[in-house]
Image 1 (cartoon, rainbow, N blue to C red):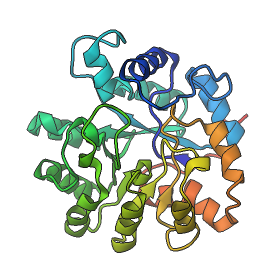
Image 2: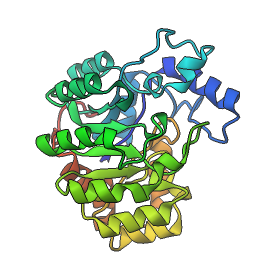
Image 3: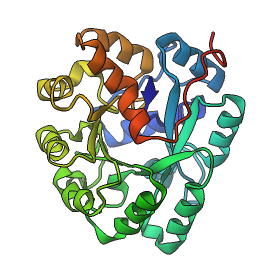
Image 4: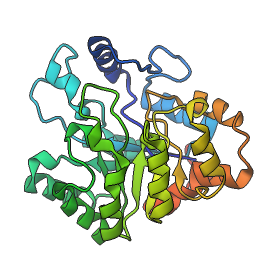
Amino acid sequence: MIDYWCNAFTPDREPLWAEVISREGLSIRTRSGDVDDGFCEPAEMVKRMDQVGVDTLVLPVCEPSNRLGDDPKDQAALEEFAHYAVRESELKSLVATYPGRFVGVFSVNPDAGAADLADAAEAVDAAWCVGLHSHTHSWDRPFDHPDYRPYYELCAQRSIPFTMQAGASGGNMVHESGHPSAIAKPARDFPDVGFVLSHTGAPWVFETIEAALEFPNVYVGTATHPPRRWPDTLVEFMKGPGRHRCLFGTGFPLTGHVRSMHQLQDLALDPETAEALLDGNARRIFNRIPQPDPVSHRS
């Protein structure tokens, strides 16, 4: 099993999530305080992954641009997605300690222009990198904005996918930038790039599914939405024409791995659908993810 989007999970990030949810009055919950499914040290996360059958976590990777650090009292830290993502140094340590269990997607910053594109090009040559990623609402640019095009070109050159948050943001950001309709031009212009519209595209789930039906290189990712809240239209899609077009993700800490596995059982997915959703589709799209070793790092 592969989780295509998991945010930084170590306990030092927990106060940041708690502060932003409280300060902005967000109607979201995290797995904060959940002993079995909450923030934890890497060794505990690997044990949890083994418990529920997760081979690999795909972690967005970026560095904070402000100089205020991670203090939750600093508004800049609260507003910048990089503080909720994994630093490259953190991921390298995870990869070295637990080979094959953690990989990363470089999270782009189109505000930074050519300098960020150069960083992205360097990152995709690293062993830990399996694709590019955008926290869409941080940049207030639709998917067909010209500033994204060089990144799409880089994905095409290196045969890697691009994952982006679709739909509305849970925070105080411009929601319209995540509308799934804007994926049409990139999907046409870059037919060899896999585009993963994450977060189910909610509240535009139907439009997200329509994009996946129209373009064979557009996929629907479930991260941040627990299975019990997946709309019937999405479940029907993944059981039918979208069987090979959907990816499982938690968006941890918004959804936990243990809880997700319990809730998935209630959906009564047939074996072929479950295998495609939980593993096969992600391995096909993120083709740099190593195959699991049946003996290493298993309890």
